[in-house]
Image (tube, rainbow, N blue to C red; front, top):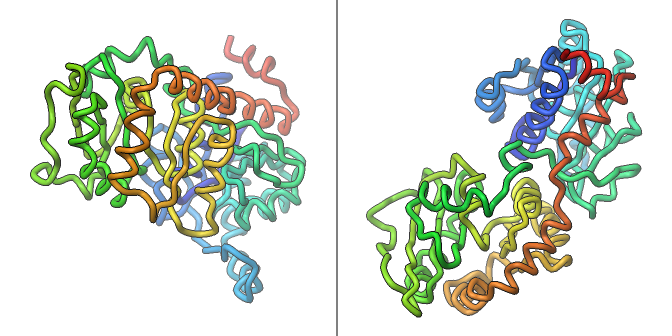
Length: 377
């Protein structure tokens, strides 16, 4: 069996695709996997790093909303669809799995032209144009959010890296704290704004850090590679309130999110679909500060966790050091409340989305997981 993955551009499209690829290969190492991408996306780095083949096709930017520009899409797509169809022919594709983004729409049209079955996964609450169109070509539709209303969609969650979907935070906590130089006792606030960091989060946290640490709340802060300036960061450590040791540890980037989540008791983060899925799946309470861009998708992504009791939400414009001190100190020091919120988040989260999506792929190919697993013998 050969599977073509179409989900380039951002990590939010690529990481779920690669997690599915890993799940398929665990079932049968002989399964062929090819990822479609463009020269402009992160897939040019992420896909080869994970050991999968990458085929590049021209990028065709899609309008976020129906406008007059939409009528020019077919003509601009024609060459890209031909290129995608050539890839499907060359690798002998049995299934195309789309995750949205620039490469998904031409992949869907090419698959329909070649009568190749389509499986679709939508990460966000509000689907983009590619997946809205693709959903009309298949009945095998999975969603990453329970609030997504893509017609016929089934909520399965977001395919996650195995290191997160199998994470035992309690078992890994001591190792995680040692890795970051944190104390093993007392609450830890994890702060990150995605791979690039988030300036507003950084400013509020660095201003609030002395008060948080004085109250016994230690901080693990991923500031983003471009924002990392050691000389400008707070220098805090020592005994906090009640004699608790509280440290402020800043890093440019978190290469091991499993360790970061294991060290944490509470998360301060944006509302990207991948972030929301990971935080819920590992059972962490969070304070979400949605990025106020686009069509408000980050707020929509975070709402299920907040509604379930697994998180708080505040507008980006209202995030201040005073708010962090007023709201997060009492929360971080309330073990019972943290546990309750974490349990609510875990109840919402899904750890098996990669396997569930793999089941849909086998179904589309006319095979079964059991047959594929037996092929490994």
